[in-house]
Every structure is written in structure tokens, then in C-alpha cells.
Image (tube, rainbow, N blue to C red; front, top):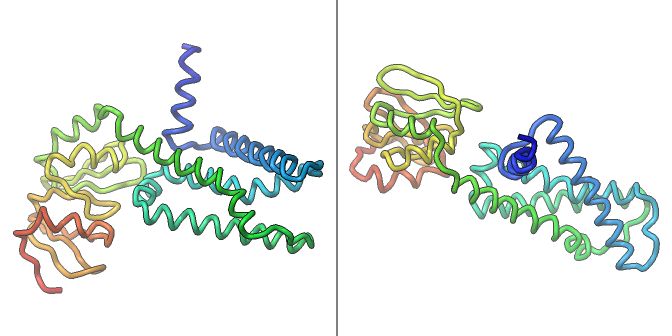
Length: 255
């Protein structure tokens, strides 16, 4: 039993959202590792003593810890949806880098030590950026390769009786036959289980059984799908394209 703990801990760190003491411990470890990297970098590039650790610890908090936060957020449901889009992930990376560099400039200005060039500030962040993007990609592939859970298998068996699935924190709501039941699983797991059973993602919160769609109403941000049960669900802009091919014969009412 004791020998299994390390692999379980390692899998949890890389592939599952961290919380509580584990999250705090990993955050502190990343912070200290970043400070050590800064200290070593200054020693190798200047050949001089890098000075007190306070400067390295401050730099790590500004330039390293935010990338750990991005990686952890990418393992949350909303973060996973955002970072799976390359353009949005690139935008997040650029925004975090710009904010980090701006904060460092402000700190240096307050200390009267604005000497670093912009290119150098960018280069010093490249290792953390590269590692973060690599970890996000590896974690996503590992999750996709996992065998379906028993909950997902059971959910696929219920597909014909469901109208739509709605996200509810750590649960999903299963709507069908005039009733709603809860199941503890992620929206991503539900989507993987139901993708081959005719369900399509129309919103970050909704999966819909295409055979239950009676019409699509409105355009752009006001678009909704009307189901045969009479329920109407919003269509997210990022998911509107999912409806084109599966619902090409569906009547579209003017908005």
C-alpha cells in the first residue's frame, strides 16, 4: 500500500486539480524553485554574487508562480475548455507575460533599479512559459487517453432517454423524460461518453441530444435551441459551429 502512494501523488499533481494543503505545498515548491533559478541565472550571467534572496523570491512570485496558476486553472472545467483552443491559450500566455513584465517594471521603478531590457525580461520567462504549455498539452493527452469510468459507461447507456446534460459544479444534471437527476462527473467526461450517441456541445454548460432539437432560434449571441420538450437552451458563440452540420435540416426561426 505504501509503495503505491508516490505514483498516486504524482498523477494527482499533474492530471487532477489540486486543492488545500497539496496546492499550497506545490505552489511554495514552485516559488522556491523559481527563486533558485533566478539566483543561478544571475550568477552564471554576471559572474558575481546575486545578492540577497529577497530579490529572487520577489522575481519568482512575479514571473514564475503565475504560470503554475495557469497550469492549475487549465485542469479545472472552465480552464480546460479555454486552454484547449490554441488561439485563446496563446492570448492567455501573452496577457500573463505582459502583466508579469509590467509588474516587474513597477517593482524595479519603486526600487530605483530599472535596468533590465525588455528582451531580457522576455527571455527570462521563456523556460516557465515553455514548461507550462508542455504540461498543459501532456495533461490534456493523458486525460483523453484514460479509459472511460464506470459512471461514463452507465451514462452512455442512458443516452436515448436524455434530452440534455447541464454542468453543475462537480456534478452534471441529466434532463430527460420530464425529470432531472444528478451524477458526480465532469462535463468533459459526459461529453466523451455521449459524443458517439448523438449529443453535441452547444455551450460550456450544455450538451444536447441532437434528435431532441426542434428548431434553432435567433442569431449570434442571442441564438437558442428549442427542444421537443419545449425547453430552450442558449448557444455559446464558441460552440455555434457545432450545430451546422448535425442540424442542417432543422428549421431556423427568424430572431
